[in-house]
Length: 114
Image 1: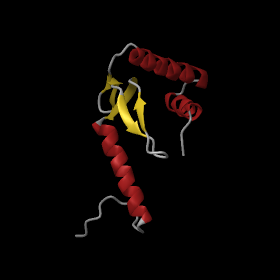
Image 2 (image 1 turned 60 degrees about the vertical axis):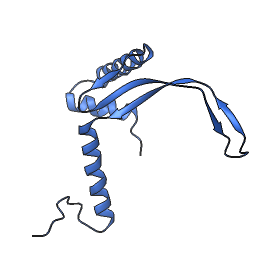
Image 3 (image 1 turned 90 degrees about the vertical axis):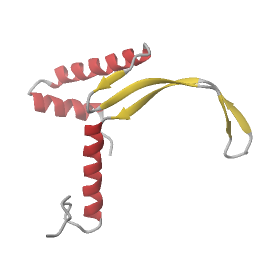
């Protein structure tokens, strides 16, 4: 299930006890600034969260999977995101809990038996 910007605005407004219009304006300004920085070719580092970087990909040859023909893929610039330690650890713990629950466990991450 995807979280929309509208839902994120609502959550931020509730947690900060601000009006949704203000939360929306702040979030949109933040997103605009991220895009502007990346468009300038700058790297954005958010400690423990991750790093956004602009990567220039060279022209390359690829293969069309349907026909097997070789095709030229033009050079392009893309945004790369490298996840930070805090996010990586939290997502990993949530995934482990989800798998444990599916396997019939209680979702408790402490699976050692004493």
